[in-house]
Image 1: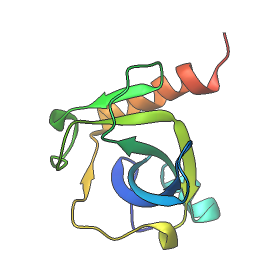
Image 2 (image 1 turned 45 degrees about the horizontal axis):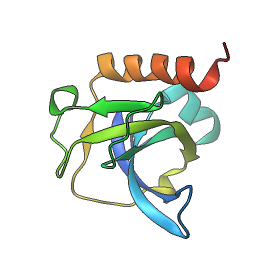
Image 3 (image 1 turned 120 degrees about the vertical axis):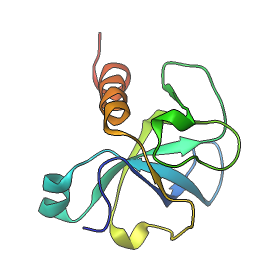
Length: 117
C-alpha cells in the first residue's frame, strides 16, 4: 500500500459533460483494511472549478499538510471512484488532508450523496 487515507493523488477521470479522459487530483477516502481486501482505493475528485451546491466541499490550505498550487480547490462530493496504484499519475505536488477534515468530508458525502431524505 503506497498511499493512505487523506492523501491527494492524481487520477484519470471521465468528466461529466466533457469528452475524453482528463487528469484530476483525487482524495483517498478509504483506509488500509479496504485496500488490503481488493488492492484499490476509494477516491473522490478535487477540482479548481468553484461551484456552490450541495456537493461542494471547499478546501483551504489549513486543511492540508502541504498547500496545493493554483487557485482555491474543492471536493466534488458526488464524483466518487475507485483506483488501483496503476491508475495513479505520478506528480510532484503531493499533499494530504488532515484527518479531522477527511472525517468531515466523509460525513458530508454520506449526508448529501449516500442518504435520501
